Length: 427
Ligand code: HEM
Image 1 (cartoon, protein in one colour):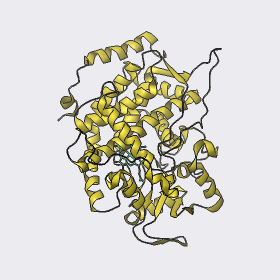
Image 2: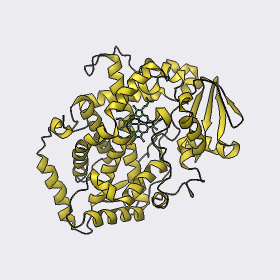
Image 3: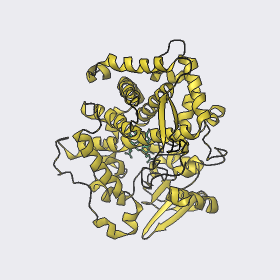
C-alpha cells in the first residue's frame, strides 16, 4: 500500500501513530505535517495570515522564483493572486459555462469513436478551456504546437517539485525548467507569462486527473454509476437532451458523486506546502517561523471522524451530511482560485459522460472483465490512476441507444465546427 500510493499514506500512517501534528526532517529540511481536518482548519484557515506563505526552497528552485503558485506571501504574490482571483470569481466562472458546455460536448462526441483514448481527450478538454480563457483560442485537437510546448515546460516545473531536490542536493543540478528568457511567442513579459502559466499548470492536470479518477470509480462502483444515471434520466427524461450546468442544482446524487470523487482520490494527495511567516504556538507545539507546513489531503480526506469507512467510494455520505468539508481545493488564503471553474469543468463532464455512456471494465482476450486495481496510482505531485482499463458504450435507459447517440451527434453538428469565442464568453 505504501509503495503504491507513496508518501501521502506513509505520513497518514505516522499521523495515526503520533497524532495530527508531526514534524519530519528530510536532510536539512524540516516539514510540519497536519493530519486532521480540524487542525488544518484551525491553522491554515483561522490563523491564515500566518500560514499562507510557501517555503523559500520552492520559490527558489521551481521556475526561478517566478511561478506565482510558489511565491512567498508577499506583495508580488498578492498582485498575481489579485489577477487570478479577478479572472476566476464565482460570477466570472458563470460566464465561462457556455465554453465548458461546448468543450464537454466535444468530449462526449469524441468518445463516440470506438477505442477513443479517453485520457488524451480529458487532457484536451481541460487544456482547451484554459487556452481559450487565457489566449482567446480553443484547442480543438489537443496536440497543437502550443499545447505540447506548455505541457513540456510544465512537466519540467512539476519535476522540480519533489522532496528529493531538497533531500539530495545533487538533484539541483538536473535540467532546470526554462528561464523567462526562453524564446517563446506566447507572451511578451515573464511575469504575465508565469501568471497565465500558473493557471495552465494548476488547472489542466487536476481536472484531467479527476476525470480519470471518475472512470476508475465508475468501473469499480457500477451501483453508484447506475444511481446517478437514474437521477439524470428522471430529471431530464421527459425531453431527452444533454445535461447543462444549470441542471446540476436539480441533481443531488450527481453532485454527491462529484464531492466523493474529490475526496476519494485527490489529484495531489500529499498537499501543497504552505509556510509560516512568524513562529506560533498551538496545542502545546512550538511551530517556528519560516517553516514548511503541509496539510496532507489524504489524511484530511480519510479522517474517520468525518468520513466513516473512509476508503470506500460512497457518494451517499454527502447526501446524509451535506455539511461535510471539501478539502480538495486547499486551504485559507492559498486555496485554489480556480475552484469554481474547476468544479464546473469536472461537473459538466461527469454529468454528460454519465448521461451518454455506460462505463464498463475492459475485457481480456478471453472476454473476461479486467477489474482495475484501485490503488495503482502514479507517483509525484499529480497522482493519477496508472492505467484505467475502462471502455464506454452509449447506453439505453429511458431512451434508446440510437436516439441518445443521435442527440450527441446532432448537438455537435449543430455547432458546425465554428465556435465564436467572443459570443460564447459574452465579451
Ligand atoms: C478541479 C480541479 C482543481 C483542483 C482539485 C485544484 C486544487 C488546488 C489545490 C489543492 C491547490 C493548492 C491550495 C493550497 O495550497 O492550499 C490549488 C492551487 C491553485 N489552483 Fe487549483 N485546483 C483545480 C483547478 C484549478 C483551475 C481550473 C485553475 C485555474 C484555471 C486553478 C488554479 C490554481 C492556482 C493558480 C493555484 C495556486 C494558488 C497560489 O497562488 O498559491 N486550479 N489548486
